[in-house]
Length: 302
Length: 310
Image (cartoon, rainbow over all chains, first blue to last red; front, side):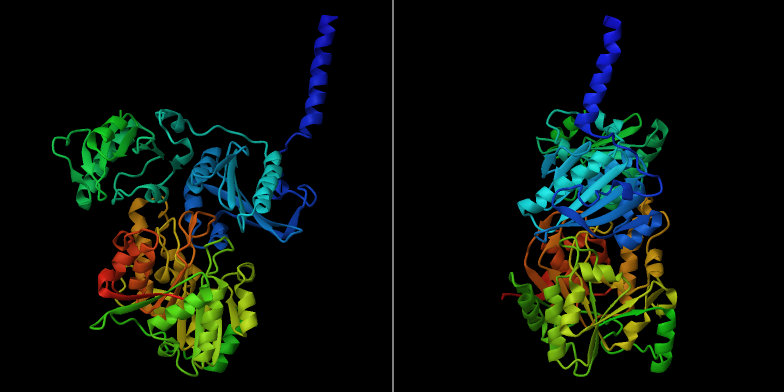
C-alpha cells in the first residue's frame, strides 16, 4: 500500500501545483519576443496601445540613437517594445531586452538600476524607482517606464512586469565574480557589474585607456564609504600584462599622485578628487580600493 | 504639416530650388567665440518652461539678434524618446516658434531623420502642427546629405549634413542637457549629430570603440570636429529636467533645475549646463576639447552668464 501511495501522492502534488501556479512558463518562439508581451486582458485594467516594435543587433541604434553602445558592450541580441494604457489615460512603456547571456542581462540591470529604489520581487532581482522599474531574469532585462509617479502608474508597472515575468522560464544566478566580494558592509543594491570601458567610465575614471581590457569587472560600495573595483582579466597572464600598462597609464595621465612609501607592487595614489586609491594584484584580478584615507583603501583591498 | 522626404522627392525639389546649398548667414562657419566682449549666456529660471525659454532668449540678446525678418528657420529639438528627461520639452519648442514668428521669420521647420513616431510620442509634432510650423522628416538615405568639409578637423575631415538644412538661413539648435553613457554629458555640441547623416555619425565611433578604451576619446573629438563645420545662430537648451543616469535614452534618475539656457557659444553653454548637475566642465572631454580648439569658452568666470527668475 505504501508503495502505491507514493506515486499517487506525487501526482496529487503535481496536480495541486498545476492548479495553483497555472500553466508552466514556456520559452517563447525563438523568432519573436512578442510571446512575452501580456495580451489584452492579461493585466486587469491595462491594454496594449499601438503595435509592438522589434529591433535586433545593430538595429538597436535605430531605437536608441546615440545610446545603444552600452547595451552592445554588455552583449545585446534584440528588444521588443510595447506601450500599455489604462482607462484613466495612464501609460506604461514595456521593453524586453534579450541579451547575449544571463551575465549580460545581470550586468545591464546593475548598470541601469540606481540602487536607491524599492526592491520588488520580480525576476532574479528587480528595483522600482520614481517612475520606472527594471528586473532581470535569465538572459532578459525588462524595463518598464511610467510617465509620472502616481500610485496607479507604479501599480501598472508592477502588474505588467509580473505578467511578463510569469512568461519567462529561464533563470540564472548572478556571475560568480559577484560572490568574491567581501560581504561585510557591502551595498549589494548599488553593485555594478561591468563588461567594458564604457561601463567602467561611468563608475570611475582612470584617465587612461591602458591596461583596461578586462573580461569583467565589479564596482561595489561599502558602509564605511569606501569602494572596491575588481578588474578580472580572465587569466593570471592577462592580469600580469595589464597591470603594468594600467599603472604606466595612470602615472602618464598626471591625474594620480603616487603616495610616498607606497610605490611597490601594491601602490597607493591620490586621485584628482583627493581620494586614496590602493591597488593589489591577485591572480587573474586587480583589486582597486578607493577611500578617504590610505589605510582605509589598503584595508579594503585585503 | 509633416513632410516625409525620400531621395526621389528630394532630388526633384532640389532641382527646382537650384540646390544652391550655400551656407547661409545663420549657418556660418564658427568664428572664435568670446572676443573682447566675452560670451553671453542667458538663463531663464522657473517652472513655466515656455516663459523660461522666452526669458533666456531675451537675456541672450533677444530673438531679433538671431532671426532676421524673412528668415527661413530650421529647428533641431532632441526627440530621443518619450522617456522623461530625454527630449526637448514641447513648451520650449512652442515658445521658440512663436518668437521666430514675432521676429518675422518667413518659414519655420523642424528637420529630422528620426522616425515620425518619436515626434508624436514626445508631443513635439503636436506643437509643430498647432503652431503651423513644418516637420520635414528624411529617410536615412545618404543621397539626402551633403558633404561639408571640416576646417581644422582633427579626426573628421568631412561630415555629411542634411542638405535641406542649407535651404534655410538660420539654425536654432534645441537640445536637452542630459547624461550620456558614452560621453557623460550631451548638450548643444552633441545635439548637432542630429543633422549629420547616420552613416557619418557611425564613423565617429571606431569599429571597436565600445570595447577598446583607446577609441572612446575618438567620439568626443569627432563631435568637436562636427561643430567646426557649421554654427547655429542660436542654441536654446532645455535644462528644466536633467536625466542624470541611464542617458541619453533613459529611463533614469531625474533632477529638476527648471532652467532654459540660450546663447551662441556652445562650449560656454555646455559648460554652464554641466555645472547644473555638479559636473566640472573640464572633466567633460568634448567641452574641454572644444575650448582648447577655439570653439568657445569653457571657463565660466570669463562668460557673461545672466540668470533671471521668470
